[in-house]
Length: 586
Image (cartoon, rainbow, N blue to C red):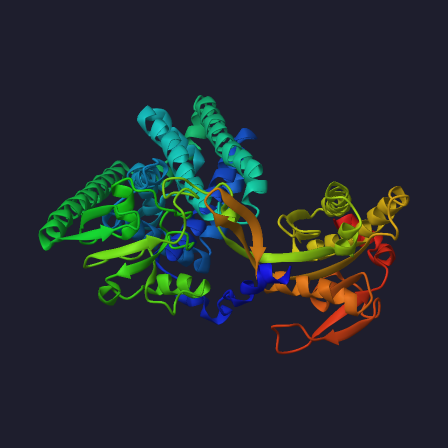
C-alpha cells in the first residue's frame, strides 16, 4: 500500500511566506482597491436602506458614514483606491486582447467603465460643491434635484444596479476558488440581492418623503437656501465642470479604443508566429497574444480555472520547441510557478502569462476537458488545490491467511463487510472515504472544516471503527476462526487534492507527505502492537492532554528526523479522550 503513494513525498511545499510579495501584480492591486471600493459601496447602500425607516434616519446614517470615510487616513486610502482602480480598469480595456467567450468578463469591464460617466454629476454636485463653495448638500437636496429631473432619478437607480453588479462579479471571480465558497454561496447570493433592493427602496421612500415635505414653505426655506443648493452661477459652474469631465472621460475611452486598434495593426505588421499544440493543431497568431488568449480566440479548449488571472496553474504548458527564445516570466508568473515547483524548469510556463515572440510548440499539462478557459470551476478542488487535511489509513490484519482458507466469494464478502464498517464510521464522524486499496482504506477529514475539527473527527472515527469492527466480529463469530483485527494510522498536514488519473479513469484523492506518513504509521501498528498510531501534530491540534496517551519517537522512512507519535492499544479508549466539548464541535 505504501508504494501507491511513494512519489508523493517529492511534491513541492508551499512557498515561504516571506516571499508573498513576489506574487503581487496589477490584478492583485486592482483586487485590493476593488475591495476598498466595495466596502464603501456596502456602507453607502446600508445608509440608503435607512430611508425605509425615515428621512431623519437617512440623515443620521449619513453623518456616521461620512464621518468614517472622511477621516483623513481612511479618506486617503479611499481616494487612492478610486484612482488606482479606475486607472487599472482603463488599462485593462487597453491591455486585454481576448475575453472569455462567456459574457460575464466583458460585462464586468463595461459596467465598471460606465460607472464614472453615471456618477460624475452626483460627485461634482455633492463633493466638489462642498469643497469649492461650501455647499452643504445632503439627502433632501439630492432628492429634490431628482424630483425636478426624472432623468437624474433613473440615472441614480441605474448606477446603484451597475456598481453593485460590477462589485459582485469581481467578488465572485475572487471568491469562487476559495475552499468554502460553495457552502457560503447561497448566503452571499441572498445578501447580493437583498442589500441593493433595500437601498433602492430606501431611496424611493426618502424621495417620497421629500415630495410630501415640499408642501411646507418653512421646510423648503430651511433646506433649499443658497447654503444648501448653491447660487445659480455656482450651479452653472458645477454643471460646466460636470460636462467637461464627462466629455474628457469619453474622449479618454475613445483614445484607448483607438490605441487598441492601432496596436492590432502594428502587431499584425510586426509579424505572425505559429503555436503548435500537442494534438497536431497549429495556430498562426499575431505577436502580443498570450498562449491562452490565442486558444480563446480560436476556440481551442484550454484549461484555466481562474480565467487567465494567474491565480491558479491549471493553464500551464510545457514548451517542447522554442524554449530558448521565450521571454522571462513576470514576477507573478514566477511566484505561481514556484508554488507548484515548476520554477526550476524553464519549459514549464503559464499560458495566460506567456506571450511568445517566436514559433513555439507545447503540451497542455492539464486536460482541457477537466475545465476550459470559458467555464468556471464549480469544484476547483477537483482541479488541484493545496490545503490542510487529516489522513487516516485503515488496514485489515490477516487478510492473506483469511483468503487461503475460504472461497474467493466468501473472502470478498468479509472484506466488503470490513470496509463497510470502516466507511460508516468515517462518514458518521464527518470524514470522506477516499480510496480502497485491497483490504485497506484511505479516509480524508477536513474537506469542509477547520484543522482542529478535522483532527477531532478522525479520532472519533477511529473509536467508531473499533466499535463497528467489534460488532462485525460478533455477527461473524460463527464463520471466523479469530476476530478481525485492524491497524489505523492518522496524520495531518498540507496536501494537494484533485482529480488524479487518465481520461475516464480519474479519481479524486490527496497527495503529499501527510498521506505517506499516515500510511507508514498504520504499518507500524504491527510492530508496536497497537490498534492506532496518531502523530503529535494530530494530538496537539485536536487538543488532547499531553499525558493522555503513551508517546514515543519513531523513525519514518523518507524522513531524516524521528517523529513523535501517540499509540493507542485499544481504539475504544478514545471515547473517553474525545470529550463532550470536542464532540459538540464536530
